Length: 430
Image (tube, rainbow, N blue to C red):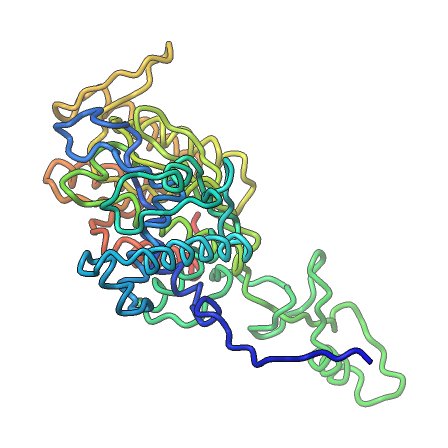
C-alpha cells in the first residue's frame, strides 16, 4: 500500500509580503524623470544622468531601500545593510536570494518584464551592501534591463488616481455631464413629447396618461403620435485630451524633479479615462528641442534631456492629433516650467534663444495658440514656476485661447489637473 506523508506548511517570508504596497513604494523610482543627457553632458547643469534606472541592479537597490524603510527585514539584515553588521556572508546571501525572489515574483505577477538575459548567474554572489567589488552577479544585473508591463502601468495609474482623488475629497466619478438633455438610457429629468430622431426610451406612464386624458378610460385605449412621451437624460459628451509635457532641462534643475509628478498625473488620467470615460481619449506629447507623441506604454521611461522649450511645435503636434479626433470636447493640458526658447524653422532646423523672451519665438508660439482656438481646442496651462515674465506669458496664452492658467507646484500639480478635468463634467465647451 502506498502512503503519503504530509507536513505542516510553514510558508515563506515572501508569501506574507504585500507586493502591491512594495510596488507603490517604488513608484518614484519606477517613474523617475531621469536625464537623457548622458554622463557629464553638461556638468554645470548639475546632475547629468550618471545613474542607470532601468537595469535590474538599480531595481535591486531600490527594493533594498524600500524594504529597509518598511521595516520588513530582520534586525541582522538591517544591520548588514547599514554597515553595522559583522560582514556575515550567510546574511548577505539571504538578502541576495530575497532580491532575486522578489524580482521573479514581480515578473510572475505581470508587473514587470526582464529583457537581455537573466539577472543572476549560477554560483555567483551579489554585493547587497554596495561596498564590495563588483562581482559577476552584479555585472549581470547591470546588463539586464527591466520594463514596466501594461499591468504595472495600470497599477501605478490606479494608485496615483486614488491618491489624487482622495486628497480632493472625491469618492466617486462618472461621465462628463453637460447642461444639455438628450433621450438616452438614464432617466434623470422630466419626460417630454417624442420628436422625430429621439431614442425610443418611452415614458409609459406619461404616454398612457396623455391618452387617457384625451379619450377617457376605455379598452382598448387608442394611442396617437402626439401621446408619446420619452424620458430625458443628461447629454454626456466625449472628450479628447492631449497632455503636453515639457522635457527641457529645467524640469529637473536645482535638485527638484518636476517631471516625475507630471508623469504620475498622466498615468492617473489614463486610468481614469480608461475605466470611467471609455468614450474619451488621451494622448501624450513631449516637447523639448522638438515635439513628439509617445505611447502611454513608454511613459515610464520618458526622460528630461538637455533641451530647450519648443512650445510652438508642441502645440502644433497636439493640435494635429486632436484634429483627427471627432469628439465633442477637445483640450490641451500643458505642463511646463519655463518660457518658450526654441522654434522649428521652415527648413526643419531648430532656432534657439535661452537669453530671454525672444519676440520671434513668442510670435510663433502665440500663432499656434490662436490656431488652437480657431480649431475649437481649449488650452489649460499648468506653470511650475512663478517668475514675472512667465506669469505674463501664461496669461497671454490663456487670453488668446480662452483657457485657464494655473500656477502650481509639484505638490499640488496633480490635484489642480484632476479638479480641472472633473469640472469639465458639468459643462460643455463650445
